Structures are given as structure tokens and as C-alpha cells.
Amino acid sequence: MNVPSEKLKFVNAVIPVADAFDTATQSDFINMENYRKCTFIIATGASAAADGVITVQAGVSNAACATAIVFKYRTQIGAIPPAALSDVPGALTAAGVGGFVMTQSKGGGLYIIEVDAAVVAAGITNGDHCAITITEDSNVPQTACVLAILSEPRYPQDVLATAID
Image 1 (cartoon, rainbow, N blue to C red):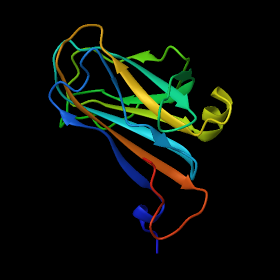
Image 2 (cartoon, rainbow, N blue to C red):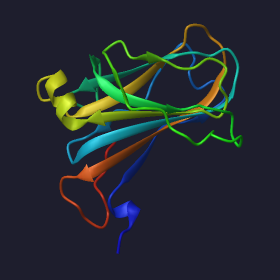
Image 3 (tube, rainbow, N blue to C red):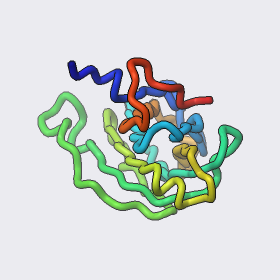
Image 4 (tube, one colour):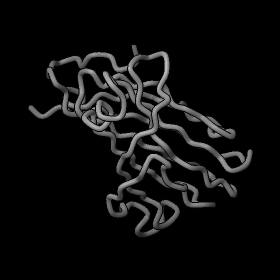
């Protein structure tokens, strides 16, 4: 039987809050030791003029993730849900260590950030942890949350190993 919870590990990396991205917010550090891929999903709610910069960092432990790394992303912001085309993702795009800028004033958007364990390991010696940072250009409230989805477990099992040690 194909059970998603046996193939994917879900982590609430930034809990939903009204001012989630207050100047600079870094997610929980995600331990990729037992996984090959991590996908961060940023879901925005009602939006003002917020247009933060999204970056990804690598680290060697749950104490810090500070080394900026390259990553790939796509957006799902064609329209405000439930409008037509609001569920259509954009093309997978490469982002450098400087990240990319969120689309201003787009409520109900999704930002899909793809992180590969090999890139984390290449970014810093012995790197196996990653985090995402959203840095606002101003202190404009942004209702949002970040969900981390780990996939391709190295050792599949009925209950997947923790990713937030």
C-alpha cells in the first residue's frame, strides 16, 4: 500500500502567525541525515506590502544553520485562491545564495523551496542540517507559515525518524 506518511516526513518549521516574518525569521533547523530531499512550503495568508527575500542555509548541527546555499524553487501565486489558476505552479527556478524575492501583495500564495541533501553537504563540510530564512524589507505584517516536507528517506520504515533533534 502507498501511504504518504511512510514516505514523507512533515515538520511544522514556522507555525502560522499573523506577523510570521518580522524583519528576519529563520525556520527550525531540519536534520536531513535520514533524508535526501527537503521541500519547504511557505503558505501566505492575507498580505500587505510584504515582499521578503527567501534564502536557505546549511549547518552541521541543530545549533546553527548559517552558511547560505543554492537551491531551487517554484511559486504558486498566479491568482488569489480560489480564483482560476491559483493552483498552477511556476517553473522550477535556480536561486543563488542570495535567494529570491517574494511577490508583493499576493495573499494565499505558495512558495515551494527544494533543498537537496547533496547541496547541503557541498555547502559546508559535514553539513546535514538546513533552514530557511525569510527577511522582510520592512516590518510589514505577513500572515504565513512554513512547512518542511522531507522525502526520499534513506532507511524507509513505518514511522519515520525525527528531523528536529
